[in-house]
Amino acid sequence: MRFVARIFVFIFLITGCNKSTNNSVGLEIQPNSDMSSVIETDTMKVFAYTQSVSAVTSYSKRFTKFIGEYLDPNFGFSDVSLFCNFSIPNNQTNVNFGSNLVVDSAAVILRCLNPYIGDTLGTMKYLVNEITSTYSNTAVFTTSTSIGVSTLPLNSIFKFTTVNALYCLKIPIDKNYALQIITNTTNLVSNAEFQSAYKGFCISSDRVNLNQVGNIRSFDCNSAISGLSIYYRNNTAPTSTSTPILFPFTGTNIKRLSFNNVSRLYTNSTNFSFLNQINNQDTLQGNQNLFIQGFGATRLRIYIPYLQNFTKLAPIAVSKASFIIKVDPSFSSIYYAPPEKLTLIGCDAAGNESESIDDLSSLDFAKYDGSYDAINKQYTFNISRYIQQIITGKQKNYGFYIVNASPSNLNDNDVQANNVILGGVKNLLLKPQLKITYVQYKN
Image (cartoon, rainbow, N blue to C red; front, side, top):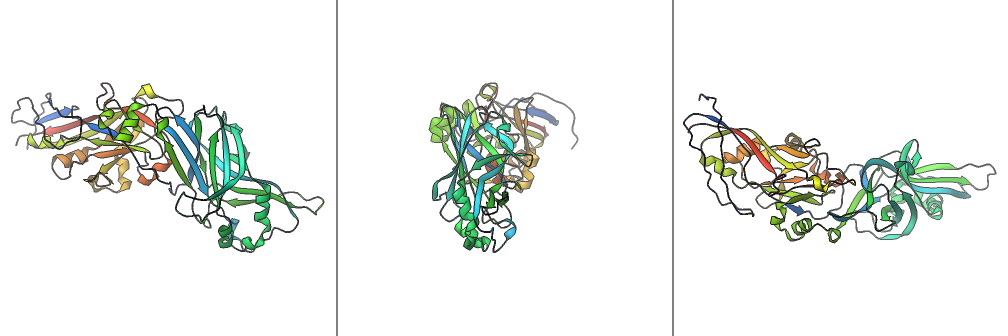
């Protein structure tokens, strides 16, 4: 078929209710000749609102983990604790540290990373509790009273201790607890015996001043400095100096990788729209704003109900389709930045997340882009094939989700900490848009 270059304005007059529907609504177009046309449109109706996601324990295989608590006026209260266990270094067996031992110092050490959310001017108290129940795939543990406490001002990263030129969080723990570890040779026979006796730690934090925002920081559990550090010596030697030993939080001998437990209290939010969307699934509250919260707490449900109407006009070929959502600058915060990347994921007939779009694997989701454009303050998703397949009937139009997750691994939403507030579907200046460029040709 020969295409003749002639561009004209293509106007959709679409009406519909504010709630999701599969009912078709007629499209009216300007009179068209038999010749082909290149058409651009950005007037498709978009239906979107915020959904809460059930809190789950974070078992991501990434070694980046978080500790802290944070109070936000829009998203409410979030608390993140770290569960980890430790092992005899290098899988040694029948370890004997000697007799007449004295512990000079003992501490839990975690390599501190730069990413964080919250107030860097506040003061946080970090606590270590011993896990006394079996370490398993659950965050419901029995823990002892605190065996370690450290109160650190967070007004500068330099307030953290330096170990081997690396910034870290250092929480002193009970010396008697540490002495028991290095003197009880029965538990030092093997790592199996050792981890049977010592189940691990729960590391948490409190805001010293409850009127402060608080802070959630990230740590590297895989670092060579992360673990239980003990300095000991033989008390009978007149000139003995302390010998260091580090029981690491990671390695092939760890019974279970470190993981986070995230709890939230939305009643602390003062944002009426946010609360009604997540608590009552009030879809109309998505008219003004949409909310994506870190640690996989919320996602956006997106539905574009009238795509099928394209097929009633004439055969078309989509050359480009972009879905754009804009950040609402009125909610900009000094305590967190928008996520560097959001991910678009398909939705099945039951409303479950699905990788069904284009039958792609999770590794292909990076092709949709979704990177944050700091200049235009927006996210853009390239969904040309997806739109073409819906229009041609090759794929059902169930809509999709937008989540704060890594495109290469959708299960990594637990290591995405930042929040963002976006324009809603009736926000005149910031509403989401589907921009389509396509060729329409005669039947």
